[in-house]
Structures are given as C-alpha cells and as structure tokens.
Length: 210
Image (cartoon, rainbow, N blue to C red):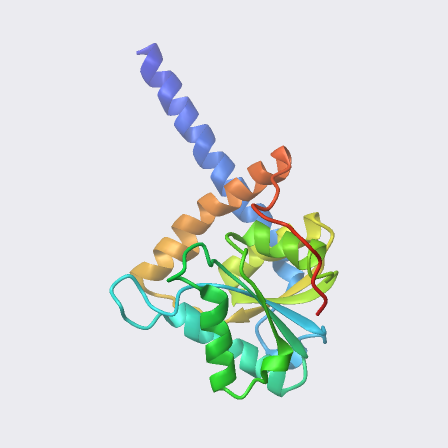
C-alpha cells in the first residue's frame, strides 16, 4: 500500500511539474509573439526553425509549408531582410536547412539573403548558435505558435532579444494534439531542466557573419 501511495504521489508531482512548465512558457512568451504580420516589429534577421518537408508517410508536412509561407510574408512586407535557416543535417541524406533554402528560393527569396545553420539539432542549439556563432542578439523566430513560445523563452534566457512570428498551425487534428500539446508539454519541461543544468549546443565552432 505504501508503494502504491508513493507511486501515485510521484506521478501527481510529475504531472504538476509538466503543467507548471507548460503554463510558465505560455505566460512568459505571451507578449513576444505575433500572428498578424502588420504588427511584427522589424528585425534584420529571421531565425527559422527547421522541420522535414515530408511526414513519415511521405505526405507534405504542413508545418514546413506554413513556416515557409510565414517567411515569405515577412520578407515581402519588409519585416525581415535575412533568413538564418537552422535545422538538422545529421546525415548526408537529411538536410533541413537546405530543404528550407530550396523552398524559399522557389518563392523568389534571393540566395544572398539566406544563411544556413546545419547544426540546429534542437531548439536550444538553434537559439544559442544564433547568438554565439552568427552574432545575432535580436531576431524574429519563425515556427508554429506552440514551438515559438518555447523558443522565445529560451532566447530570453540565453541573452537573445527575440520575438516570434507564429506560422499557421494545424489545429483540430491528432497531429496537433501530439506535437502542439502532448510532446510540447514534455519539451517545455525539458527546457527548464536544460536551463538548470546549463545545457550547451552539440556544436559551436567559428563565427559566421550574416
């Protein structure tokens, strides 16, 4: 009986920690995210967080598509001038930054306004490298709202003055419930753990000028 009580207590504590982490990120990012492009303050550089253009089943990934659409919208109305595309390129056959670059260029964004970060393996890596490698202390982060909330909080902690432009989301679907609620709740908890332990990016390296 005591073992059961201990397990129940630990489970409740874990749920509370996850819930508080999720809520804290929402509150801290609330005034730093924008859904209307007309309201977005100008930043020279947009940090675009990577994802795969295809789902595991081989279908178009609308998270990817809507992030690209958001980038094009920012650029065309003059809210950003350069893009730092940060994503996973851990294998020769998987290259998120290049996928994003190809998509932006298909929309008419000149190559001269695109910089690639091949070591954005996770959001923390992308945010820290944005400052430490690419020298950006003020950026507009582009991703879906649930992701931007965490990215903006991370940026603030690591000394980057960041705002988020929320790309269109995929709500009312099982995908959104998994990524936007379930997985994100755990990711926000992990974010606070990383901050507490002083987590560093997997790679840093030489500085690159944008």
